[in-house]
Picture 1 (cartoon, helix red, strand yellow):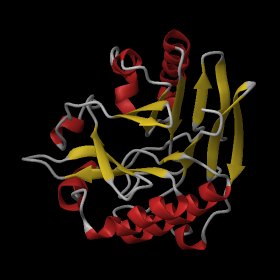
Picture 2 (cartoon, one colour; picture 1 turned 30 degrees about the horizontal axis):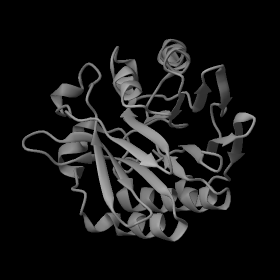
Picture 3 (cartoon, helix red, strand yellow; picture 1 turned 120 degrees about the horizontal axis):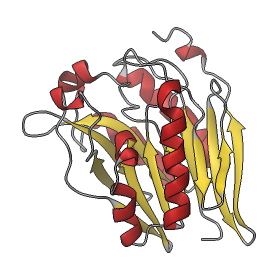
Picture 4 (cartoon, rainbow, N blue to C red; picture 1 turned 60 degrees about the vertical axis):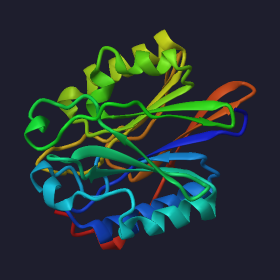
Length: 256
């Protein structure tokens, strides 16, 4: 685990603008590569923004042509890249996370624990998704999964070293949500991390403050507004954290 680097990306995206949002993701991926990130996670539904009412028409499959650039980036940078997207299903779509591997494969995770009201637009997933990367076990979740009484515990039983999720958390929910993340990190002796938005999406006002918790408590977090990478690296002295600010891209200046 000595050279494994986890990063959560705090970004803003445009409503339903997949092509524009892909460019922003690729820009952040380039920055993550410069910092030798091994595993990079974006916020919940980052490819489209958090737009439940549009999810049916925006939903994709894991072999959609729009994903080829992510597959190429994962291979080029030898990085696992986790992108949020609505995924097609029988009936309602899923809130999904697409995991692009350095070998050019695409894995997926579907949110198992829906937030109240999401069931109007989405169906829940049924399966966990844990990856073993050079003896580092990474368990994947999405937002309300982290509020579940059992989700983190299920990954702990599987031996997860890291539990990470793309999220959308507002100021009103931040204190309680992050208190549980810290408690899970301590109870299950694992790193817990979340990637949040820093700009409104879907009528919600995320607080930013993407963060990573070790069993000892908060390791590192971003502020409310920066576009940033929040990074944790396992060293001989334990987990070390840092925040790398990414200059905002002109293409996103007109986000609505």
